[in-house]
Image (spheres, rainbow, N blue to C red):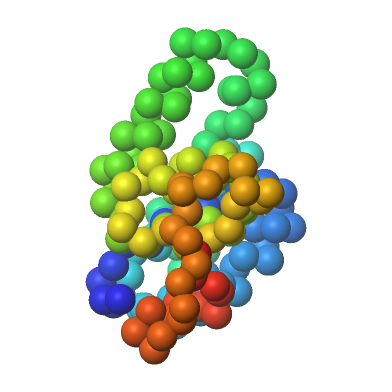
Length: 146
């Protein structure tokens, strides 16, 4: 992997889970200092990442909007999010959440490399399947390639 890659990290839920993801962000930054790191998280948790030096960009998903069932607003937000993910031209997406919904977001980026796991196999094919690790394909952050 080139040091100048664009990498998207996905972790939507819970403040604690996001905080536990930060050591992986540190490791990525240590190993790929010139990579652009973007972090997709819930809108209510995005402020945690503001000012966090290792993250270059925070992308917020307004999960509360989906609960309000305002179809027009949900549709507009979803389309804008998809556009932003596609415009990012990410070379790698790491899904730390492991749910079908985050696997779908990972797939929607169009990134050639997608790492993570899908909870209970809800979304087969959205995350790349596990391959035997080799020196060239081993992720630099200590997580499994999927």
